[in-house]
Length: 73
Image (cartoon, rainbow, N blue to C red; front, side, top):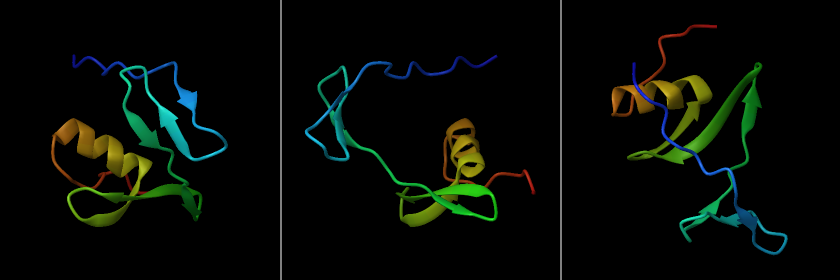
């Protein structure tokens, strides 16, 4: 069984912006999702610009390379 990576539970929001500071002092930007037909998508640059659903993102994390989910809705 593969362990889930530790995700930061504490972060600080930078002055009414979409940026946050993570516990390791890195800055990240919160992404705004798009919902189409009940599926949540994010526009990502992995390795090129692409729209990925949450299921696609999970499949990419598991595969270790950019891939599409096999779940069909």
